[in-house]
Image (cartoon, rainbow, N blue to C red; front, side, top):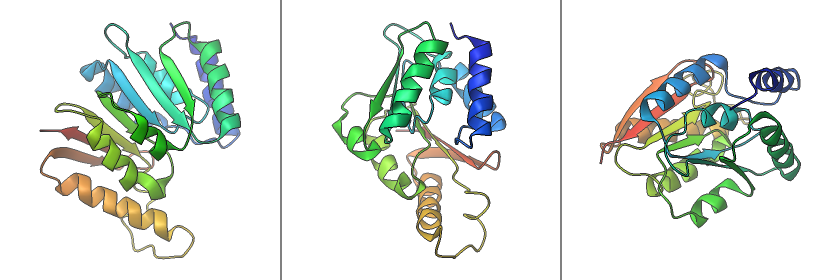
Length: 198
């Protein structure tokens, strides 16, 4: 069980400290998907303070159900471990401190859901590995794919150019790949939901 009061406090603290966490409307969509899917294994790319992994853990189903979540920043990954230990009485979330792409290449298991919320310029690399780590019926969810409206607009300034370009490539890939059924939702900061068809 999750301590809902502590979870809510973690959310407020993250927002106040400008820690990027999944926005409420996006979280509600993801929770609905998880409630339907009843995943046994979830891979999360981008732990931050552990908020989303904790929320997702409520929807795990089956024996040895587990979330593996990876965070590049060592100090933040330690904060996430502490938060998870304080808020959940289950041992169903594992936090790894690593480069996300390198971590993904080291995995060989198959995940029911892959949730991507990390370096925007790396989304195509994460997707490449997500294909390898999923099967028919698995779901790949990517947050922030519209990047504050920049991706679908005419944005071409230097500061976010690489991230915007890569996110445009990501959207093109997931919407045009015949092996995927994809929906792009203009909620939060943009949510891409892709189901593996074959």
